[in-house]
Length: 456
Image 1 (tube, rainbow, N blue to C red):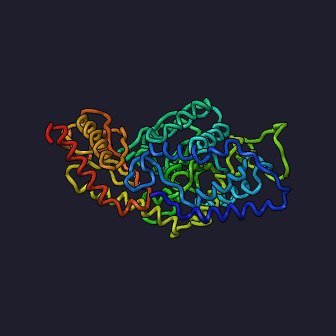
Image 2 (cartoon, one colour):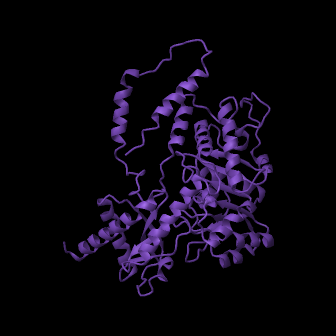
Image 3 (cartoon, one colour):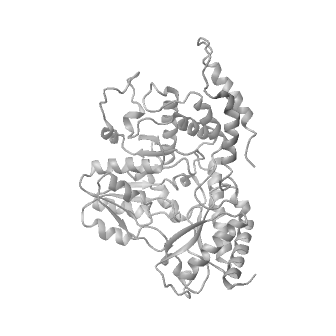
């Protein structure tokens, strides 16, 4: 099942890379343990069997998407050199490729002039964005939706910035009335707008938040770690499209290439609209080495050593699949969203299921119908287990009951939160597999109900 056909292209690329150093004097490289490499590598392959099949369409659980072969191969190719994208001495070529790749990401959001870099993932990217926000608005608070990623509160604690969560509406978006009431107090420095929450894929209403900024003067950081690439998709809802079309107006954006960007972990990216944000990174370390007067990436990053291989992989993938609307990459995103809509429609038309709301991206939240909220949670757990036994891997999410109460008014909502099923259909191939996934869900549900009733 694993893709292996591109290995021949990889071997040819290694030879091409090696030829670039042919002028060096010959030497014999020491490889400790060379005689046991095959044995230990085989053991590692065997140990890796203990994983869910993340690469297969029947894995429809968490945000796990296989990297493109181009990314795998380019990353591995760079590892023959192992460049460090801190200072130019450590990664001249890979630093240049990082700047080009990040420039293409910025252009995807409509920014030509910008400041940005890659980092280990969305957590560090958000940390850097909030660190700059805190320095630009010292003493003021950070706010984000209660459905925003938990890392915003955690990062604010690390940075010793005050943080408050804003209530969400029944669609998992930041409640605009609650936000308006809060920012009127005048002590909010930054509002984090989630462009695709990790739980439900919900998109905060950016145009309205931008309008509030005009009145109250706060900074807007867009956490688009999950949903950022969907700006290229052409089948978004009208409200989602309006949010994406205004992204160029925010102050900073985080996007994770290791989610929808087809990259290996870890590869996140933080981008600032105003390059002047670089002033906050200034340092005068006496031991940082410079071989060029040009700005190096270590001067605009909180992290020091960073893998140049991640930049090479991202650059190569974007050269193969450009970040343009209507392109092959964008079509894959549209297929993922269509897969989510197809599963949503199938579940909504089946009286055995409750579907919270129509997905805005490619994440579907649903639960089996039962008499009351507690029974729904118990049945969701059983369906999760039964589905896994059949080879279909889902995820569980504990969410506010208000997300589902309107869709099932006859249920006794005797708990504020319920355990739901969550499917992230982030592979384009999921679109063809939705009928099979839906059928397997039905089988798992019937088996769960039979088990609960004590029948066979």
